[in-house]
Length: 435
Image 1 (tube, rainbow, N blue to C red):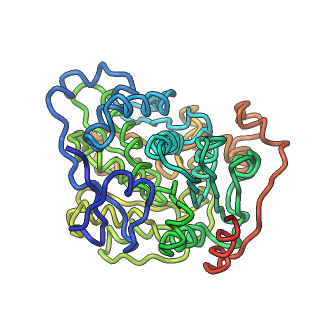
Image 2: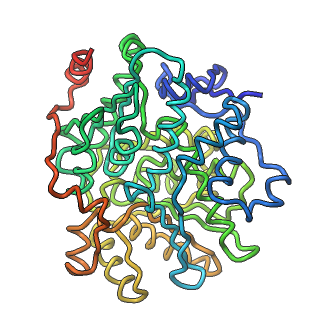
């Protein structure tokens, strides 16, 4: 049976996988969700510890997409996309870091972007015309999407990023590839970028005429491969240990992918959402009232989101029941000063180097362990420290961070970006001008 997808705002209306992935955003401004995610069977659990990461990923993706994508094609998509590891590093006893930055752009977004690019290529294999991929980024998404779609035939990619709010090397990843990749430098915040992208999709006639699709985590196909590494981490813990996953969170796609993994039967002790000053979800978990607001800039810039899109999916999973959500997800928030202190402290105590997002996660893990000392905490480390070179050198010294060659080579490349404001009509007019 093929999988069907519904909008979080219209649970009774369904579309197929091609509509959900390529249209990205339903006309009602909800988000697409799989109709049903069933637990994996004994045939999976009897041998899951012996599978490679890509084999594991295929079985998980098959569980979500069912027969919507032929098994041989899905297996090839996963095998091509996930060709790098996600090591689980023991920092202290029962304290782990899951390193998700070993892909080509040194960020966890490589999992979703590479899978999405190959899935979209398969879904449009018989289509005429150009697929236009829109993506808003607060840091790493744009670089991963640019890399994944660079020179892919039949696609053009438009990346919106907030001016002055991404790191220098992150910006170079967005703005130096050229070819079918265009960067728009927006005079605003990530929330403004995300709003502009959504506005284009909601202008339905233009969206369909231009064949628009999104590569943000509003797109359901971004989240499926992110569930792979939750399984991979869990099986590498000591036998019988249930993980407490601690997730640095901005748009909450990563945490939602973890919830998908749990729905597929992965035993999880607890989810912990760690944010910077943009603490809309931790406040909701404490008080029961969701109050999105304008984001503020921090040194953990990929989490600078004041209106996280994937909160709608989280509500859908928990039936909008606050008590159920807060029983499975704990929330903690920290400021830049605390983040800097943790980078220095953990490096001095253990020799391990956390970048700003991972440091926020580490603090949340420490807070959780105060009341749960037996917990096996797994902090998701989402990007390589060298992507935040200014902060890391300020805290650990100039010789502390080695820049991988695939990032270092971007330093001298020329930035090419188009300046735009935050007006929706002006952005849509710019898009119209591409035709």
